[in-house]
Length: 375
Image 1 (cartoon, rainbow, N blue to C red):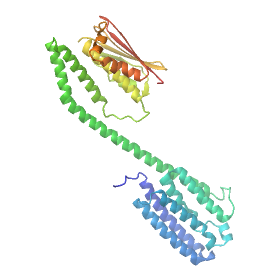
Image 2: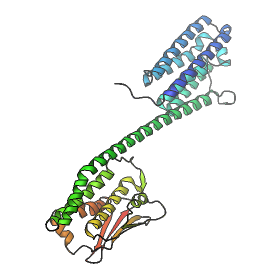
Image 3: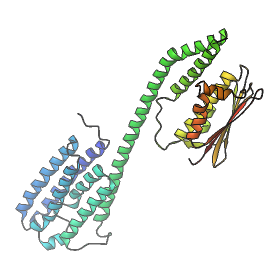
Image 4: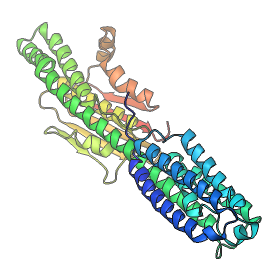
């Protein structure tokens, strides 16, 4: 199976360009100091090892098979070993007066590889290890960064490259999530069209014709109308993933509920709630408005009011229709029709809030939905 693309691939490529330049610098350094070495022949043999290992690393990182902990660990071991080999090819005084034999610039390749693969902490840790190897050669630890800035450079490289790699991977993850969301929304639109052209239109036709015929078919028309509205809500909400912990604006959701006979009064400031809470509240409001259409009368108007009370959010849904006769809800529940208790009261109970109903014959219906800020 093909491995997923690595978002840090551009960094790996740039690192190999740096590796090439560092090898050229190490070659120039080797030529310049060759006469000062105690064992120049061993120095050139070790330099051949340096070049061979650099070529192997470049190929491994460019083609991807070396982008793993084992390979980077091996690179760190080789770098430290070549740095410590300065004691073999040069005198102690030479090591004290100069940088390590392969040059600290070339040794920085290990810091870069660790930072790209594992992030800034690993990069800075390997940078400290390279600095420590240099300190072992000299026999002391220099705290004068003005004269010896190796530790600062190694830490800066590990931090900068590691953060760049982390940012690239995080951006790639967000881009993939956005692509999945776009695909999900496209699928939802397709599903919505298919359902609308089929089941929803059939239910709407049954509801309309049942009301026109009247008599015993009225109850069938009401059931079809309820199912039509429930299906519309499901199609509207299905397939819209929301990242965990995201807050959305309830004002924006309820604003879309405004219609010819639905007046919506909203605060000027956003009312931010956790996404799952806001969507449940919006669904409860939608169900209350559906009940207005189905039961309050053809000329009834509805009014939605949203209030942010700091410790809670209150949504009122009121209509000026005929109201619900006393005992009608209990009668519907006895018949197995539990739309109100499940869609409104049940939702608010799940949110830790309350749904209070005020109604009566001739005085309309009002739902007061209270949602606490902390569930």
